[in-house]
Image (cartoon, rainbow, N blue to C red; front, side):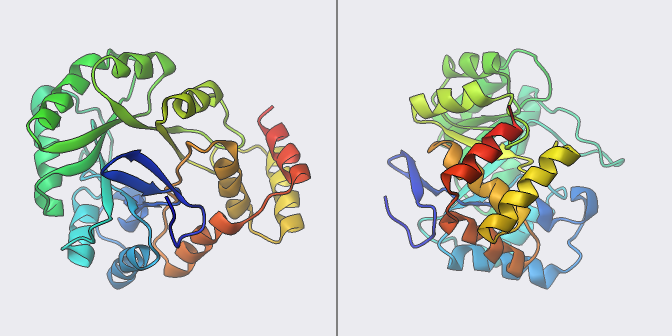
Length: 283
């Protein structure tokens, strides 16, 4: 699969081709992922720039805002380009104190899928990720989503914030196209799961690509960035692309200029010495 976007794309199914550099829409909401954006016009410009850049992987959730981000996506992009794939997430809800409690009952999951469909203006969701918040059994809530897939409301299923054990249990319930977990050059607990996903042809989508750094680790990252003429953030994202062909990125931003910086990561070459230095950060 080829694309005009640096970094290429990954085919996960006949109807699911995602650019390796996608876009995470969470930051388009207000502070704390709550309420309207600081600059609504710029948020709409960012979404249109995403499509203009050739990105086909747009990550969202109806609980971002809540509702705000999906409404912005629909306003900016509907009717959607034929190759755009919208990946959404269920399994949590927002409370008035801006909390994120789990929402994993059958009724909550069914309602969440229908809310995403309604606000995005879709008849079926390309991918729905089930977000887990603890080590509870994943099979029951995932079975609910599998039933909605059988009804034609969902095309593909993924999982988020899961342990290796939950991931393996999920494989016994339904085909899984992606895992969305906390992982970056400093936070490497999921190394084995990243490799397992690559073996199975399943996408691994890291969140918090810059989270968990300690001062010495950040200094090593900064040195590499200076050597290759890029920002720390760009180097951290580029390392993820080098780490595994299964990794897809969904960096978020509320700025068109920052979006362009993220896209440029796909063309950033990390020499062998830089990779050795970065690999050692998580060692």
